[in-house]
Length: 323
Image (tube, rainbow, N blue to C red; front, side, top):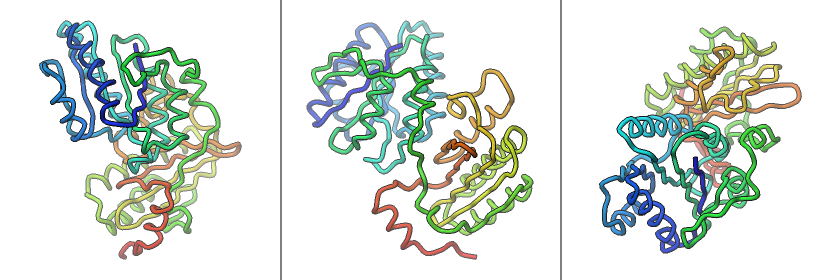
């Protein structure tokens, strides 16, 4: 596997990186998945003389676990058809484009484990003009290779093995809604009470029913894990505004020992690993927070808020949910 990162600061630099990467794949018959903004996709289309092996995805990366699953399916399908290599080119979401970074940082590290023995070359793109410095620092720690502005790659001496990166102490995302007291707080709830609480809160929002029901399933999975594998007491807290619902499930246990929990289905051990993986497929954001005395799963339905000041102000000004 090749997992590289490229940082660019202009469209010309972007093309100097992207075109040689895709052209090299075409020369050996390697199918390539391209996940770029529509503007950058058009630049690539205009620059590539042959697009027969290129698949442009119109939807950006949304959920890390779903992206890993899609890449696995893309890779497997083409390998079965005789491809000796597959290439993936994409722009990874981050705060510069209004998305929380935490689970995408976990994604970048997990890719190195998930495709370690696979004939895949992955190139992740970051626009230096809008990517925060802490994100770029994580990028250098999660990519074994760095691509230069002229399209060449170098071995990255700052790369850290995924197990080491994922188990280090890191700042954890906290939604701006959590600055206020929760709308609902349940101690040692049964799954039925949790389902009712989430559905009731969801009914006061503008979220599609499918998003609310996905959150219901995810919360029940997280709650069941806490009851079966954590330590009491278990606490469920819920916040909501018209555009999203945030739920935290906290117990006094240590949380999963698998550093890839949620992003990959558990290969062995208790079925709780599959529940977290399912939650990662259904929610707009899932974070796992470990402290000395507790483990918290945070689940969000609706567009997650960026932790920037403008997002905090917007949430403070938003009207409370109806009901």
